[in-house]
Image 1: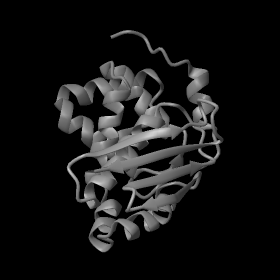
Image 2: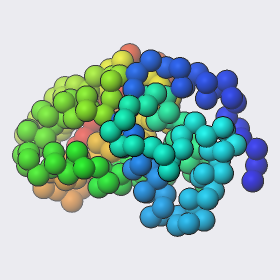
Image 3: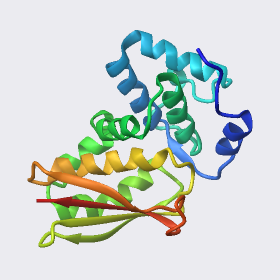
Length: 203
């Protein structure tokens, strides 16, 4: 296996970013890798984490405990390096992990309409993160468009495709359409806004 391409200073920077995230997100990552890559993939991911000093120990994570928010990016970076993944695979991971989330399942069962689900999304975000504000900026069912904005959340670019896949899955749960798309129309890392903006469209 190749040596880590992520400098220890970068991991330290991410860990020291103010804010917390629930351990459930790491367990979802781990369950996805276990399902997709099997025992060999699990060993590869754990080995990568060991190379970095085990900043995320998946076997010891608890779903409801708060962890440094920067570890959200560290987990994905380890996955990316362990398997040689790109943005497409991280997007697919984001699209798949809502099925592992108890809170998402409850959200879908409780609020079945498009309006209610996306109105409740900011509260759902707060259950997982102490950093960032998710804004239901626009829902236009006539134009078949939803715009979400994520403010005060500039952690690492690897999270951009993750949330695109994630938000698309929420749309796929509630929109009665076989053709649904999502695009990050604004991004704080591109410098075209101070926030991340995701636009969902369907036909």
